Image (cartoon, rainbow, N blue to C red; front, side, top):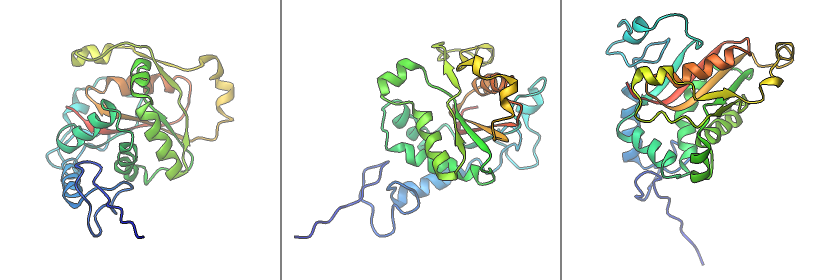
Length: 238
């Protein structure tokens, strides 16, 4: 007896036919693949420093112009905007706990790691523990472990969330909020840093709203780790 297994698109549920589903590590139909390509193309022009969407490549970045002082992040890279299919992916993965989307999120983020060496340490922005318990997993930790395995980079969960809710806060309140801390601070002595082989650090999050979370987490890490820190986010919400 012969069995036939029909691959169904992980996003819309429709059957994948022919070569459909081969672009990503999980089945994605040709229609959703085209929509993803269009979504990623929206951010083809972005500031090389902060990842803000630009109408054209040579446009002056408004976010960099408004920022004051030096940022703890060398660069930030965004894959696409927090709308359309990108928003649906994040909400289905983060809010609904659809864990199979971890592979697709890693697929979308992986091209941004093409220039990263094996000396790069990937660090996730942590979730609130109540959300981890509700969801059953830390969604960003899963993505970062997958990225590290694919690229032979390092992985470390160095931060904890202090349960401070940022939902509903204004942009300035988000920037001023301090809802994160280093894990096991006593173990991160400057004398021990030289024994860690990593040369760069990549801080990864799902959505950037104000940038406050990324900058605060990077600031905590830069106080201990003397290495360049870069940011990578799946979706940007201006």
